[in-house]
Amino acid sequence: MGFQMIVIILLFYWAGTKLDARAATEKPVYTAILTVLGVFAGLYIVLKDFIFRKDD
Image (cartoon, rainbow, N blue to C red; front, side, top):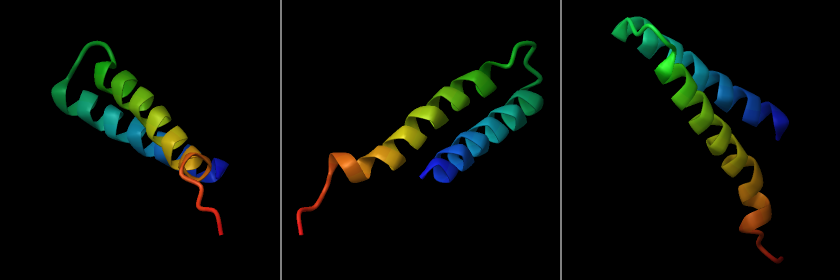
């Protein structure tokens, strides 16, 4: 579970750095935004099993 979350956050971080480099921004705006979105996406992926638990 933790590995999935770390991979998702790192992918979003990587995408943000690529966007910042491409847009030549002075501050890492895209990196910050996408990293926060990656944290929320990672939390959702990890916690969705607990939120939408199927009773067998």
